[in-house]
Length: 313
Image (cartoon, rainbow, N blue to C red; front, side, top):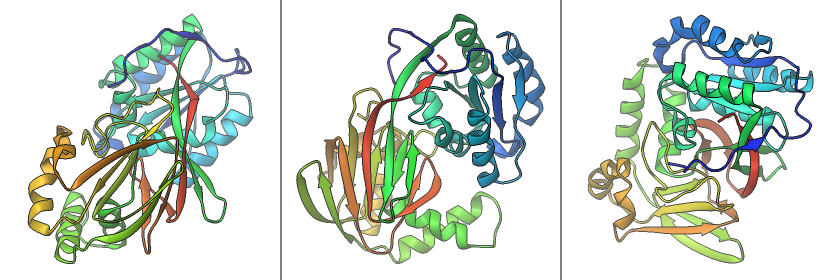
């Protein structure tokens, strides 16, 4: 987890008197925190600024609403939900001056927890409201993705470009069953056809070709609700961590995968780790998932951008 560093004043350019825009996902965490929203908004209002709840009926609308709120003069952006909600909100504040507060209320809350926010939503909101009242924020890095067609996206936690991304892609194509069983079935289906794929990685100036099953690039350490896939990643060091799991067969992958929760998988002889500022990943037929959200097709170039977002902490 990120160590708390000295506080900064809110970045110059953030409108001091604008509303606090709030993106809330009522379905995050299977809706278990839905009833908390009025209390969370009330706690935010103690910062002495108007609170504006954004409306959206889809992920794309949510992202557009965040961008519009920032463009219209929001003094801060707060995301209530899991990593997917945070991911959408980050697209509006990355590289800018409007500070951001993630409130962990989803199934996976890796970015918020890894950057030092309490895991309980009310406690996280209290931290954000206090930071707003005191006019302080803390910068952390983000990863900038650039696709082959020039599309730019940002992420805060981890980009998956191997087995986990392939499983997500299959699960998203399935219409039955609903709920977590769909993901479980997608894992079984992809395990049955598991094969290493040829990747070309460019790590700063070093080019590597490798046959691999797992490829992940972390700005933070964890994804998927606490799986420490890149256990040594630090979102304040200006670098990205790369974890490559090589020619795993099914039995070995099943045996090693639970070790990811503790981060000890990196000690396996088939796992290799790297660290770089800029990384290009190329492979055939892979759609990446960043912060758990469907993202860009390979090839992509990933760049660590220091102090890319100012957290209300």
